[in-house]
Image 1 (tube, rainbow, N blue to C red):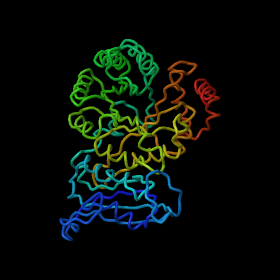
Image 2: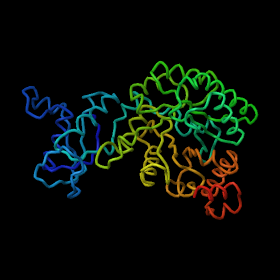
Image 3: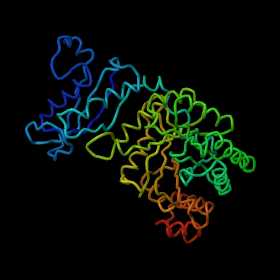
Image 4: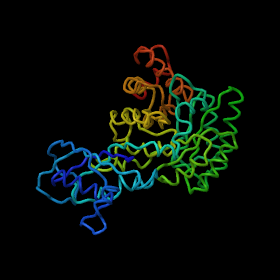
Length: 414
């Protein structure tokens, strides 16, 4: 029987085996009391199974509302499995199964989904990323180094013409990738259609001059029909990427867009902190990102080294490694392009390279490019020089002595 698995971190004052069985029963054939219809035959066919329990020692209760049990709270890693026949290869129902009525159970003062292992039937249905790393590199013409990117700032308040003027500066500066801020959508001050037409006129003009087209991720987030229409407009105008706020549109909205999409989808994780910030609740990025990788996200945000948010460097690097790691053997691996952002500049290139060991990423710097003393051109130059030095093993201080733009970036942002 084909099964799928989920790993959890749990904290409970109850016997670990009893608590784990409560998880399995709640998320499959059981309930809090035995019911006549749950026969041994039905349980053998449909019940979730506790595969492993790895005790991790005593901890303090993290979250309110839990039952006391014995009064001694212990943490453990618990692995459950389910028959695929319970739900079929359905991402929305997978989410309801592995992350449904678990977080509320009184047995637990902490519960966090750590990882998923899925059968190949999921990627056979959903397809995974259509572009990923290789397709993104093909469309941008960037090989052997990270894509250097930026975000249109101010986040909101610019008109379509203002945005196009900024894009003109960035294209002239040699940028590889630009994205809308997630707050810029289709407001009356900057309608999506006006912005897309103005921006693509500039990008196409520069592409005619250089032979290389800058990738702009237009934020198409909206109702399903709006997203599809916006995607189609971007494609018609010659654009090469669209962006979606994952937590705003949900899995079904995203997969509806993906089924009709012919461009890469840049997946933004805004709102992620609500799902992850407490270490005893919610999701690890590895598990959460697998849902979106199977669904078809080509680029996934992972935060960045020395970022402006609360996430640790180790967490950001682990997230990036996870999206580059194949999920399935012998078929589509669902690898996506990690996007490093949040307070980034040339000063983080060496540490990012040392920790990740890969150039398969988009390194997006807002202020690190736009606020560079040499303007956007200086910001782009500093990022490229830093990455070239990092990969070549040239220390940052040495490289900065040879490149004024890099020296300015390190002095300003380090």
